[in-house]
Length: 66
Image (cartoon, rainbow, N blue to C red; front, side):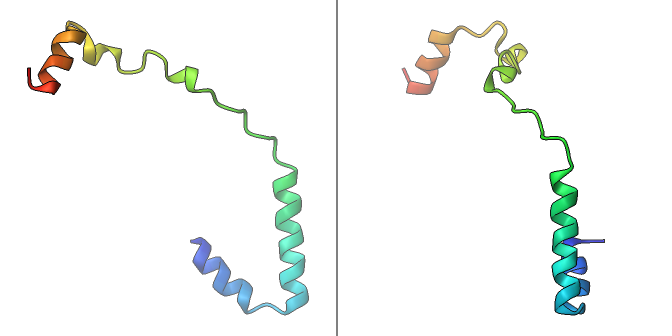
């Protein structure tokens, strides 16, 4: 079931039922544990094997067309 499908069903409800649905959804979301904050540092070293054996200066010179 998609969000759009649910929305179409919600539109068919009475206004008081729509408000109740919203309150139930808010309560549900509020009761969920917060997601831990992520850090860019977690990406450190990711994909380093791609650059193994590549000389950084040679690579830059290649990009610059030297």
